Amino acid sequence: MNLRQWQAECIDLALAQYGRGGSHFLVLATPGAGKTLMASELADQLLKNNLVDLVVCFSPSSIVAKDFSESLHLRTQERFDGLIGAKGRSLTYQNLQYLDTSFWHLFERYRVFVIFDEIHHCAGSNIGNANAWGEQIILNIQDKAKFTLALTGTPWRSDAAPIVLSNYMHPSNKISCDYVYGLAEAIQDNVCRIPQIIAVDNNNISVVDDDETKTFTSFKCLLSQSIIPYQEIIENEKVIKYVISSAQKKLSSIRAKNSDAAGLIVASSVEHAKQISTLMKACFNEEAVVVTYRENDPMSIIQNFRHAKSKWIISVGMISEGTNIPRLQVCCHLTNIKTEMHFRQILGRILRMTTSTNQEAILYMPAEPKLLEYAYRVKQDVPFEADVVKFEKMKAVAQEDVENKDLSAVIFDKKKPVRPLVVVDFGTSSLESIGHVNEQPDLFSVDESVEEHFLTSSYERVVNIYGRFQQEAIALGLSELCSDNAVS
Image (cartoon, rainbow, N blue to C red; front, top):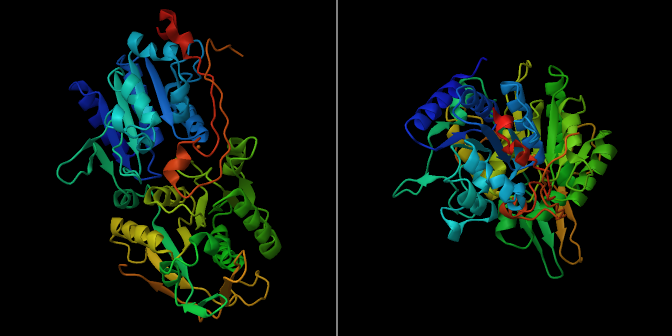
């Protein structure tokens, strides 16, 4: 099989480390670089060289777990459904808390290779500081697996807790990775697209209360006063219209060359997603696909969109890290989650290189200070690209498809119980570079637990519910592998 250079190098280093007696190997590779394929090839080599008996993979969401199962099957020509004759199983991290002793006994009877996708979700250097998933890994896998491969595209946690199975350098306290493949290298190797980040701002904002009217020249100035929450900005109808109209125009331009190119809108709640969907239908005559944790089968919705021709998909927590939809090239960041890990993972959804003619990747977002900080750090990762981050000032009419109403005055009315955001007098449009600034019976199964939950402002809290808001139980069935014949 034809591997990318970084994938071949990484596999060679991992095999060498395992050969020297090492059990764990940590890989940092930028989102979209091809970690799943690399891990599947490494698993195939370990199986074919009789170095392991079984492969178990854990991922943060069911769609990513399914992608891993398919990738492992394609590479090894073995089954990974946990049934009789299978070589393993691909599961979500949520399953860790529901596995019984029959499963963990596999690690005592067989040589098990464990793949951890997006390992940063699992925290803990010991039981005392571990989260629920990290605790299970420390107790049942760390010293019992034959080999482990930990993958991440964002090697940090918003709570600064240590990542499980990781070593840290002193005195910097930075994570020590066994192999690193950054965004700059991925762009130079034509593995990832060059990101373009458009920060939409407004230079004439008014906040009206009973006594006075305050004016602000940017979202940064507005938010610094703590009188208007960021949620009100991303829910404001005119802000939504402007951001999406700019993104719609760009997507139409890309689709002139790539007919299947698509856009992703990341919303903050189910209600927010419905609001955006309604506006897109009314203002742009666009029927966007909506996928949230409330759907009966969100995974099928994502899978269908992956191979469809439709333009837009609106997601509430369902399309982030590891979700592979290469035709995505435009993204609107309209969520209230403002951690760098989440920002990088969202950006990574539009960076996967394809064979299409146009390889642009553009993310639109409000010019919120934290998001700008993360955007500038992305720019630092690709210093040879001067125009990674740009400002765009809102103007009266962003696109002919938008109904011809005044998009210029933004007014926050504090006199009302619910303060509508209305945008006024923005000035001319300018685009300027910023130079700094997821019929064989199983012998046992996992307990089922389903929990619905609204998107919170903390991404770390979200991913510990179900990787995308629903606790999903998967029948494991790996105990069927406990006969010697099953692994021979």
